Length: 239
Image (cartoon, one colour):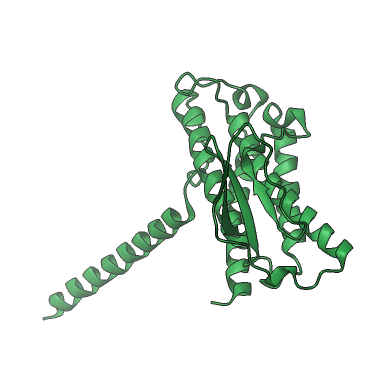
C-alpha cells in the first residue's frame, strides 16, 4: 500500500470515528443536562468533558501540523518533508525548560494542557457538535493536497513521565492515535449515558473500527453458513 493509500484510508476512518460523535450529538438523547451529567462511577467525569478531551487532542495535532507548514512556507523549505528526526531519546528534568527543537522539526505535545479556546465545549452539545464538524473539515483541509507526504512525515513527540521524554513518531501514527484515543473516551461517555442515565445511543458509538469490521465479518459468515446449511438440507431432501 502506498503512503497516499494509507493516508486516505486512515483519514476516512478518522472521519467515520468523528462522525460517531456527530451522530450522538444530533440525537435526542443528548441535552444540556445529560451532556453535563457527572458520573458517580467516574468522579469529575461527564460526557461533555470526554468529548472535549477528544477534540483537544485533534486540535493539538492539527495546530502543530499547520504551524510547521506555515514555518516551512515562510522559509521556502522544500526538503523538510524528507528530513528525519534523530532516534535518540532525550530526557530532562520536568522542572527544566523543554529543549528548543529546530525550526524544521514538527513537535507534538499532548501534555501541554492548553485549554480549549471555546469554554462551552464541554457544557453545550450544540457547541460541541459544531466543533466536531469543523474539526472534520479541518482534517480534510490540512491533508487535502498531501498526496501521502504528510502521512510519513516525522514528528518529535514529547511526553511528561514526569521527566520530559522525546521520541520519534509520524503524522500518520499520531492521527491514528488520536482516532483510537477518541474511541476510548466515547466508550467512557457511553457508560455514563447508557449505564447511569439509561439512555439509548447509537450501537456503534464507542466501538473500535476493528471491532465493527469483525462484527460485519461474523455476520456475513453466519449468513453464508446459514445459506450453506439450507442448500445442504434441500439437497438431502431431493435424494
